[in-house]
Length: 538
Image (cartoon, rainbow, N blue to C red):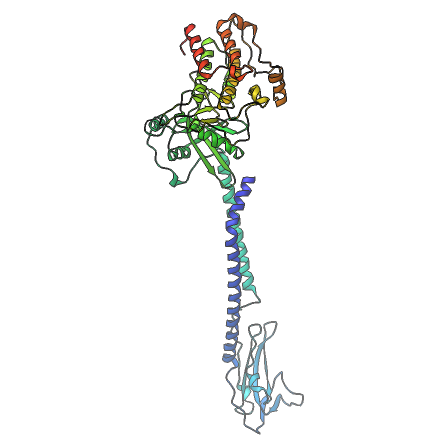
C-alpha cells in the first residue's frame, strides 16, 4: 500500500502543474469566449434593429400636424381609432410571452421619436417598429414583421459553465487513468521478485558468451588480480534474475539468483549496514584474495530506486548453506570431519597470510568467525564468508586498517581478551589470535557430529549448557574470563584417536593466553598429518 501510494504521489506530483495550467487556460478561454459572444450579440442586435426599424423616417415638416391610425395605442381623446401628432405615425408588431404576435399602431410625438422609431430589444424579445410621415394615416400601409428566430448566442454564462464542466471531466478522466496506470504498475512489481538488479542502458555493455568461471580466470590472468572490472561487475549485476530468498540475518537478506543459467548468491544489505557492505566489497577485491576456501566474489553494485537504496554483493552460490545448517542435518565420519576442518583452516590461513611482491596481499583477520559464516560446498569442503568486519594489516606503515563500523562480532565466539577489553587494538597479531580462539570452537562443533562406535552427539552451539540462547557480554565474560570454562568433550573421544587429537588441537586454539594459541598454518599442518596417518586423502 505504501508503494502504491508512493507511485500515485509521484505521478500526481508531475501532473499537478499540467492540471493547474489546463484549468487556467480553460477559465481564460471561457472568459474570452464570453466577451466575444457578448460583443457579437450586441452587433447582431444592432444590425437587426437596422434591418427591422432602422430605416429612418423622413423628418416631419415644421408646424404640420399629421393624422395617424391608432390601434391598441390610442390617446384618451381619440375618435374612430385616429390620433394627431406633430411627429410620426407608427406601426409595431411584438411577440408576447406566449409567443403570439400583437400589432400596435399610433402616434409618436416629435421629441425622441427618432430614437423610438429605432428602438429594438435584443434577443430576449422579438419586436419590430416602422414609422412614417408621408401622409395622413400612412401607417395603415406599414406592415412590420417579426425578425426570424435565431438561437441565442449568449445565455447568461452558460458557455463558461460548459467549458468548466468539460475541463473538470477531462481532468477527472486523466486522474482516473493515472491511478489505473499506477495500480497496474504496482501489481506488476508485486508479481516480480522484490529485489531486481538493474542499471541504466548506457552503463553496461555486451559481455562475451562465456561463463562466470571464464570471466574470472581471464581477469586473474590479464588484470590486477583484484577481481572483475567494475563495468563487467555492473553488467553482470544488471543481468541477474532473482529466484528465491535463501537466508536472512542482521545485515539483510540472501537470495539465490541466476546469471545465464548459472546459480549465484545475492546478498542484499540493509541501508543501515552500508559500512559492512563497503568493507566486505573492499576486502573481496583485495589483490590476490581469491582462494578456493574463501567465498568466490563475483560483483558488487548499488541501486537507488528513489524511495530506498539496495546494496548488492554477488558471490558463488553453495546450496548446502552454512556449516551451522550443514552440521545440524548431517552426520560425519573421520574423513568428512577432516575435510571440513582442513578446508576451513586453509581459507583462514590464506586470510592471515601476507603475500609480498609487486602485487602483494595484506594480512587479514576475520573478526567474526563462526559456523554461520562458513559455507559448505558440494564436495564437502568449506569456504569462509562474511568479511564485513575484517581488518587489514598495512605492513609498509605498520598500521592496522580497522573498518569504520560500530558492529562487533558474535558474543558467543568472542575470546576472553575481547570480553574483558584487554585486546591490544594497535597490534594486528591480537586479531589473528582472536580468530584462532573462535576457530577452536568451530572445531568443537564439527567434532561433535563425527560418529565413532555408532555414537554421536546432537548438534549444539558452543557453551550451550553454560549460557542462554542469546547470551549477554556479562554471561560470556563470567563463563570464559572469570571461570575460564570451555566446551566439554564427550567421553567417547578418548577412545577414538582422531577425535582425541582433534580435542587436543581445539584446546590449544582456545587457550586463555592469546600467545599460547596455535596459528592457522600450524593447525593446517597438524590436520594434514592426521589425514596422512589415517590414510585419508583430503
